[in-house]
Length: 244
Image 1 (spheres, one colour):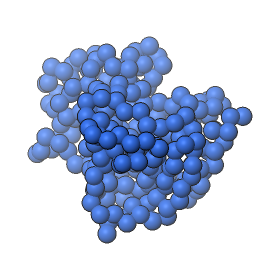
Image 2: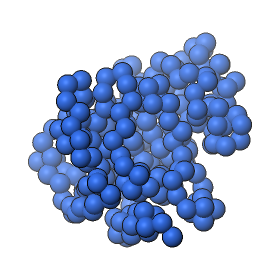
Image 3: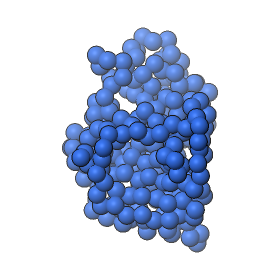
């Protein structure tokens, strides 16, 4: 058996050995995970940035299988055109677990109807994607997205951008109990600055991005229950997060 998958299972079994109890029962258990460079960059403006090596990628894909849903913002959905499913895992794991629900936070309904998420659902290789939005159901884009296969979850908010707490509570009402948040930069920053976080997993790749990089800026934080594991050339941190 490929050691990547054995190491990924051992690492994640340790992290979640105490179960999936959220610190707030009105929302799902939330895992925030992302990759960054040595200079703390998580993305580049307007373009896809690949950081994780194959070993840490296997860990991330197993992590996806352990969650009910994966949430990304519309920026990530448009630039990266992700599939938000588990592919770099053992076939036996694919047979034992259900693929996570792909979820996009998209307040202006800008998700392209020809994106991989909708194509995968249309051809039977992916689950129906959910779009969480404050846009009205009368928005012309809503009809096109629904016809392409999306399920739209409308949130009523006074502001254009709903709080993560509101989004997470809406997902809990839809049956999501274990949510994995993957990005992009704005959602990562909001998650780090909020109290809507139960588990943090950060992969650091041995590279510098330099000019044009975007950091996961956050308020001062004290990390607890910290431990590290090396996956290939990447170093992965697991921790709980608290305000200072």
